[in-house]
Image 1 (tube, rainbow, N blue to C red):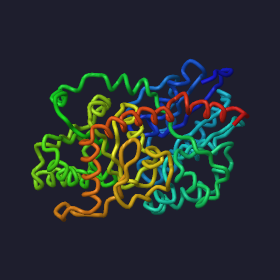
Image 2 (cartoon, one colour):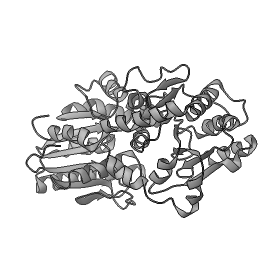
Image 3 (cartoon, rainbow, N blue to C red):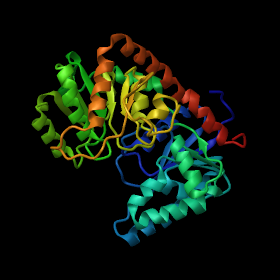
Image 4 (cartoon, rainbow, N blue to C red):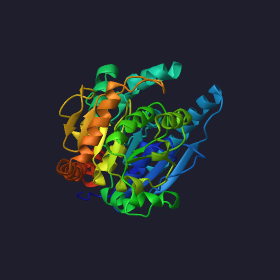
Length: 400
């Protein structure tokens, strides 16, 4: 990335505890560490910080408990952000997600402002009731006041333009520090997972909740074991609301000894790097960073063709999200249809069978598997810090 004159840049994010946006801010701040003066502004003070950043951290206000307390916290954040901006005179302020975007616009003090969106808001806000309607109105009224609005996937860009009337949304994928991912992937496995060094396994990362589709994954995995009896499944992530139901399904299917719930790992990359395959069974996504990280580790991916992101990553957006009607082989792995709803004891569905078929066939075809590994590494380069950060830098100046 070509170096320009140093800029003063603020990055506004809700927190650094866990999730795609905190990880993105961490990557961006470290990428700019030797080029620009970066301040990371946290909307919510007092939360755990699980991602390291380069530059100063400023925290605005604690989370409110009551409705009135939450409203007061928002006002405090806007006022404190405005005071910080008057004092620091930033060249540009970039915000991540709707809450941060609102604070960014409403505390503006003359600098360039860039808003980024990380979800399909018309869908997400619909599930939030009154709060969702508030965010709908806020997006429609505030986003066009920014210098630039970025979306991290094609579906998000189209959603902002068609549902909210946001003009000229720019598609910019999340940057990834590929060298850092590779280095962390070479680290030793945690002690309780050291036995995986001698195992063949597929990996999945995320909490055991409804969105990640892990109930479907274990059901599909039970079919894979019929063809590859030595294969194991490792699920890395926090215990979610469906954990007990998923564990019970494993016992009922006779695969409890082959499914490892590894729990949350601050560095999941050693597990991912040693996996034969990454399984993305999500019912919906924004832009799944973990797929990009798997590609960077040379691990092929079999994913549901959910909205949004997997197809855009694995096939470079050659067709709309959600178009897979059967298992579809792509350069970096395979895409399969999104799963139909099930209860734990229901018979296996067509979609679960297709997932198992696509994954097993990829693992058992040595020539195609090696080709998918090579394609994964090549495709990951399109999401590198060097490929993406120059676009952010241009937007922080009048060149954007």
